[in-house]
Image (cartoon, rainbow, N blue to C red; front, side):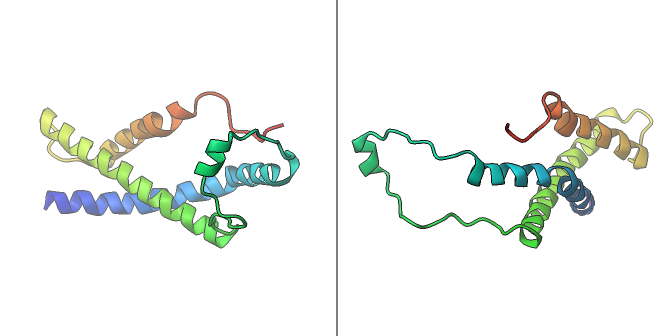
Length: 143
């Protein structure tokens, strides 16, 4: 029963937080990515690179073929949503297991988890997984 509840609530929290994260990324990150992609495609200019003849033979490159990439708009947003939801489900699962394990270790007057425990653990997870790695230079378009 406990395993089923952990999985259910992890999936639920993952879906909700993945949706929120996708909205935030679409608003703040996607314009930077699109500007960087347009910079890569046109503005940088071609750079000639010397290739060693042995490496040129070893590289098996098909001419004219491009790698698959999602189209801008719905397809890109859908794949971003899918990856954010799956990632959020994983983080939610880790956090839920840590919450249950800490409850079993403490047992000092706490018999069950409630929404306050969830907020505390969620805030700690946000600081550890998102805020601390983001400290430093903000992403920007190359000049």
